[in-house]
Amino acid sequence: MSEIPLPAATSGSTTLLKAMAMMVGSTLCFVIMHALVAKVSQELPPVEVAFFRNLFGFLVLFPAIVRSRFTAFRTTKLHLHAVRGALNSTSMMMFFTALAITPLAEATALSYTAPLFMTIGAVFVLGETLHARRIAALVIGFVGALIVLRPGIVPIGLGPMLVIASTVLWAGSMIDIKILARTDSSLTIATYMTVFLMPITLVAALFVWQWPTWEQLGWLLLLGTCGSAGHLLFTESFRHADTTVLMPLDFTKLLWASAIGFLIFGQVPDMWTWLGGTVIFASATYISYREHQLARRRAREAADSGSAG
Image 1 (tube, rainbow, N blue to C red):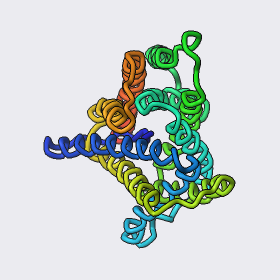
Image 2: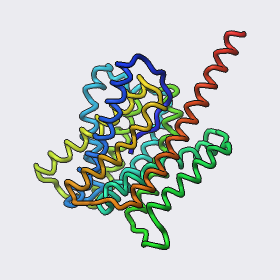
Image 3: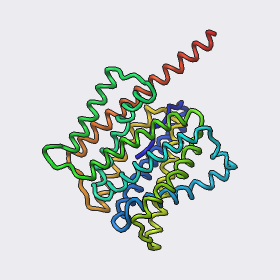
Image 4: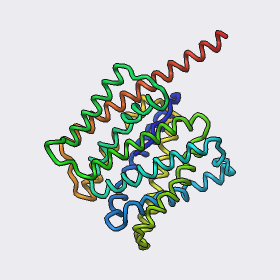
C-alpha cells in the first residue's frame, strides 16, 4: 500500500515525464515488496517479516538521515507520529499476513479501498464535508469491493478480511500524515514511521520468532530496500507533478501484481478481481481528483483574499 500525497504543481514536460517514471517505478517497488512478503512469509511468520521490513527500511533511510544532519528527527508533533506508528504497524502486520494467504492481484485490488475509508475518516477527524459527487464515488468504490469479494456467492476468506481491515487502519494513518505534512518533511515522516514501527513489530515478532537463514535475510534486505525506495519515489514524484496526472498511474500496481503473481506463484486473477479492482480504482482516483481540485480552489481563494488585503 502507498501513501495519499498532497497536491503539487506541475512543471515542464521533461520534469513531468520524470515524475511519471518515478510513480510507475514506485508501484513496481511496492508490488515487488508485496511479492517478497508473500514468498518469505511461507517460511517465516508475517509479523517477523514486518519487523525486518522496518529494520532494513530504516537502514536504507539512514544515509539520508545522516545527510540531513539528523534534522529528520526534528518535530513538534511526536504524539501524532506515535499514533501513526500504532496504526501503521497494526495495518502492516495484518496486510503482510493477508499477503501470505491471498492472491497478490486480489490483495492489490482490495487495497485500493484505502482512499475511500480515508475520505470517510476525514469527515470525522478533519471536519471535511461530503458532497453528492463524493458520496456517489464512495458508493461506487464499495460496490467494486463487493464485486471482488462476492459475499453470499463465494466464502469470504480470512485474507481478504485482513486486507480490508488493514486498509481501514491505513486510512487512519494517512489522515495522520495529512496533519503531519503541514509542518514535517517527507523524510521526517518516513523516519519516524520506521522508528516507531521497529519496536512495535519486534514485540509482536518475539512471540513467534524464528531465526532467519542467510538466504532469508537477503530476501528481507531486498524487501526492505524495495519498500523504502517505493516510498521515496512515490513521495518525490508528487513534488514535480499534479495528483491528477500521477494517480491514474497507480493502477499499474494491479498490472504488476497480476504479472508477478503469475510468474512467481502461478496465480491467475479472475475477471471479478479485474472488474472490481478497476471500479474501486476509478472511484478512488475520482476522489483524489476532487480533493486536488478543491485544494487548488482554496489556494486561489486564499491568494485572492491576501492580495485584496
